[in-house]
Amino acid sequence: MSSVPQQRLLRTEIPGPRSLELQARKSAAVASGVGTTLPVYIERAGGGILVDVDGNQLIDFGSGIAVTSVGASAPRVVDAVRQQVGDFTHTCFMVTPYEEYLAVCETLNELTPGDHEKRTALFNSGAEAVENAIKIARHATGRSAVIAFDHAYHGRTNLTMALTAKSMPYKHGFGPFAGEVYRMPMAYPYRWPTGPENCAEEAFAAFVEQAHAQVGESNVAAVIVEPIQGEGGFIAPAPGFLRMVADWCREHGIVFIADEIQSGFCRTGDWFAISHEGVVPDLITTAKGIAGGLPLSAVTGRAELMDAVHGGGLGGTYGGNPVACAAALAAIETMRAEDLAGAAKRIESIMVPRLQALAAKHDVIGDVRGRGAMIAIELVQGNGSKTPNPALAAAISAACHADGLVTLTAGTFGNVLRFLPPLVIGEALLNEGLDIIEGIVGRLA
Ligand SMILES: *Cc1c(COP(=O)(O)O)cnc(C)c1O
Image (cartoon, rainbow, N blue to C red):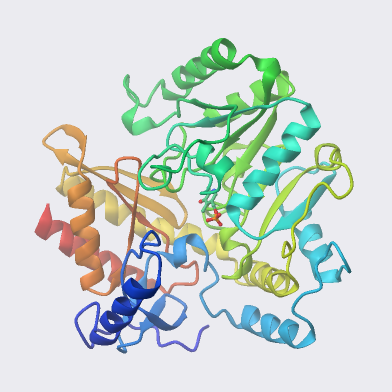
């Protein structure tokens, strides 16, 4: 466990005076396009607590956007990083390689779904992994079109902005975007026009029809999908939808890419969220939770696809940095040793019933959904109306922040509150965070 005291403590208003001073420096020094959800400056963090520069201790329901699943100062990660920094910080794997990179690739080949022969390549950010997965799929198939979905989020670089669905803030004013990207309906049970029962079948039928009519199967290199959509609002596709899409891809020689950047690494109660659907993806992109907070990302997939690219065709100066690799090995070891997949399931078993009970009392909570420690509530106008209520989501989130609970919003309509606690959070803190949410929803609903 972390040495950071596992207790919420408010010494000042949130944000406190020191944080406000730093925020004034931010305004003067940092490009204003780089936003902050909560202008509380952090000094120390670990387990389920963030300690700010004013000495406040906040409960963390964000994990730095699903990154610090093992905690923000997990002992194995800290030790491994210290050791590796002392040995060497960088050589560039493409110049003079090192064993840590191999060990991460071997581990990913073993942990990702499917017992086929696999290969992995390492990068720095999630967006970079997605870009490379598309490069590999195009090279291997000799085709150019890529299909993504409504509510998708795949990053902020040019190609990944094209794949991302939401305009504001991710794409607005940043075009033109990369071409040959096509968007198809997502099987979104809560908002499916005819209701959730036939959502998977009807969404798949629309997908097949549009892919055929607007793109043509033989032009499609890849379909990319988040097994549970992250920034889009923790939308879990209707059961069966992903399997039908994956089967359709196989039938047409199309690469099925699971973007597990947010949902991977025990977050949903399994190593990867796609396993809950019994689907084996051709390629899988990972990042966020992979390395306990250090920047690392990967593409893992079928050897024949990964090896289709010519030597020297993939890489990058920092990709698979040795310090990040050491952190990843230690983070994965922590997930194994502490059964963090089991921990994610326990978090679900505490959060979901409490949030469902809250939704039963307040009809502005239209939906409670997600898996493991990736849980969200969707806020609506209520009184039978499913009209999104982003103002209420923002108000609840702001009130949580003032009470020392870090929460994030999400969703195409900005009306989803999402909860991503570190998997190592203690039950007392988890319940205290839920108490805060219950109190605030009761007050504001
Ligand atoms: C965060 C995220 C990305 C982009 O990752 P970055 O490291 O921010 O580039 C891509 N896909 C999904 C599903 C994500 O959640």
